[in-house]
Image (cartoon, rainbow, N blue to C red; front, side, top):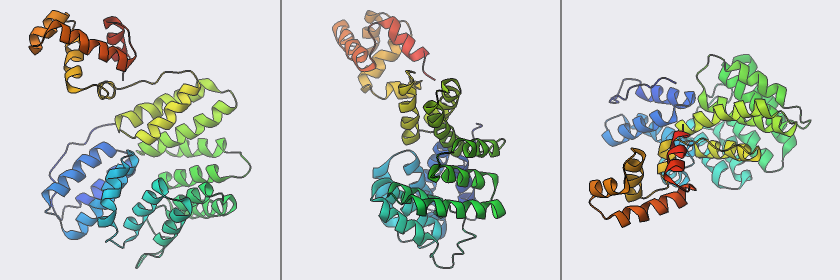
Amino acid sequence: MPAMPARTVAPGTGAVDDLRALVRQGRVRLALSMLRALEAEDVAPAADRAAARTLLLECHLAQGDLDAARALAPAVALDDRAEARHALAELAAATLDPDVAVERYLAVAEAPGADPEALRVPWRTGAALAMLRAGRRAEAFALARTQHATTLAHGSPADLALALRVLATTKPDGLRAPDLRVALALLDGVEAGRLRAQLQTDLAGLLLLVGEQDEALVLLRSAEEYAAAEDLWPLLSRGRRLLERMGEAPRRRQSEVLAVLTAGERRVALLALEGRSNRSVAEQLGVSVKAVEGHLSKIYRKLDVTSRPTLVASFAASV
């Protein structure tokens, strides 16, 4: 997806709305970097800073950084608006008992001045999924049906796709794939990368159950590429578990491969990938050839390769 250039975020420019749109579009990495810039500048009005902290918490949850999300929670809790309450409910869903999460989702609709039917945050869908995890399937399905009916009347295509995803997940009859296919079709031409990848992963899991591996693989590779590019580790891990079940190896980005190496090992690996000999690498880094050989042995072990050619191949296969 096209990159939006980073810019200085100034008060009164509608920048927080822009950032909110980025998060909804699934452009999490860009939103995260811009939110951090806004936080560092500390020049926006208090209301904008509060909204930005809520969005920052959402981004951390999407990337699986629970410690960072928890650290923001006390500040977000000072904001009693619906979006802040919803972000804290999402954190509860990721870290606490699902019944606690249900209570927090339901409290979103009770935020001061909130109209439950006009709220931009999908509190019913979150509550339905938390109810399902708590074993309250009948309640979850009823709430998902209510949300679906509401979005049919008033929602955007992305809102309706999300409602269909949760409706399919909570259905007691197991006939889920048709709803997921309709939801994906609704996102044609819509920038909603994270929701699309979630739907692709959901549908792929169902297809594997009935032996439709070819279509499942296409869906999972698409979701994997998006989730890896945005550093969405919970979604990426879920998709890769399905790929492993199929006997398919993950496609790792070069930065992801390098992340398991120490700084010294990364320097040796990158020079080795340039085709340099061990002696040339040693001269470049000012170390002994034996030290380079020691680094390479550790690199091979960490990356599960056996030689320099297979090291090169592992990077060539990364996306």
